[in-house]
Image 1: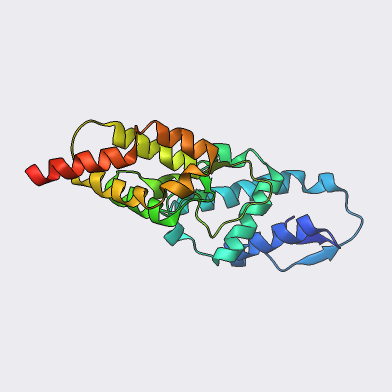
Image 2: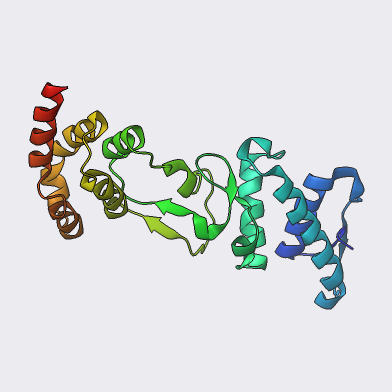
Amino acid sequence: MTRYVEKNNEKRENLYYFSKLLFKNKIKEKCVVENFKDDIWKDSDEFIINQIISMVEKWEYFNSITIDIEDYNKLLNFLHENNNKLFDDKKLLPSINREFNFLKNLNMEYNINEEIKIGAKKYIDLKYEDKILHNKFKINDLNISKYCMDDLLEEINKFLNDKDYSTNKMNLCKILINFIPDLESNETNNEILKSHNDIWYIYSKLSDISLIY
């Protein structure tokens, strides 16, 4: 039934397009029809959409996607429109590290300082790429959590509050010192920074310790 496409029906056009894209010769050439009731496609749609999802799940990684990335983004939007709970149950969304994951395990990066992020990735076992949705994908009306500067600072805070000396800790403090005025201008960030007991103090103490080693 997928090959039968109701005239001027966007859903039917899209489903045919994605089916043909993924299953190629298994889907016959399109036949435009008119005045078909929607119920006639119900079982067929359920079957072909499940087939599409099964195929996509097998890719598992960004590099395994066999269609154009723009088409995959459109497909994800189509599947989400059809079932907005789908990404809760199926690993279809690629993270920055290119592995597919559930929506609940992913975030949208929002207003993160690039230099602090790079420093945190370098000096902390942050696994940042695991938790951020790949920036090639934009899903309309996707209910995804934002990963903001205060989230990053919370993770940095846990690292700095560890009492053990490390050159990694000192080097990260050196980066943070350059941004203290900017970070303190945000009330949330400022509250987080206060819990560091003063980054300057941490850095100076670590610098003194490093001279001993």
